[in-house]
Amino acid sequence: MNIGKTVATQTWQEMTHGSHVFKPGNALEFHTGDWRSHQPVWLKDKCKQCMLCVPVCPDSSIPVNAKGEIEGFDLDYCKGCLICKETCPFGAIESEDA
Image 1: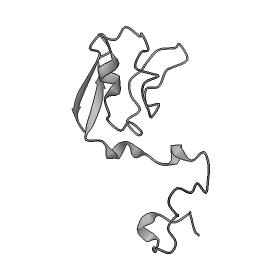
Image 2: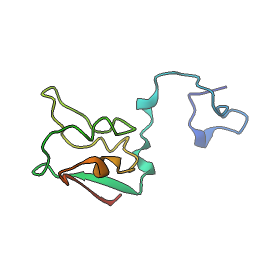
Image 3: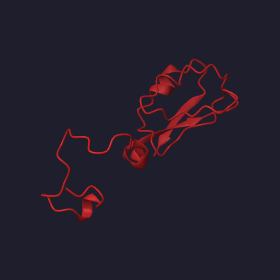
Image 4: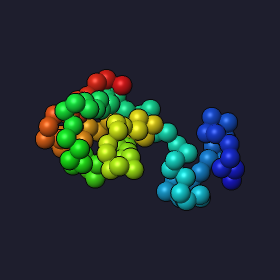
């Protein structure tokens, strides 16, 4: 099994078997944000830095800086589920088509 090749260049015999993890800790290698059809838009002026959106993000796509403040979204990994938008009590997160 050659996990170094891309899927486009692999034959079906070389593809990774489903539900098997051959290399743990590799999630950062795969930018899965391309899958989304919607994306969150952070409205900095409305944000109260309450952090309610951070723990509900299933992809940890809301980075928090060293000061403990939100700075926007990591769209490389955001899937566009918009749970963050539904959680925000201040309307500081809107959505747009990706």
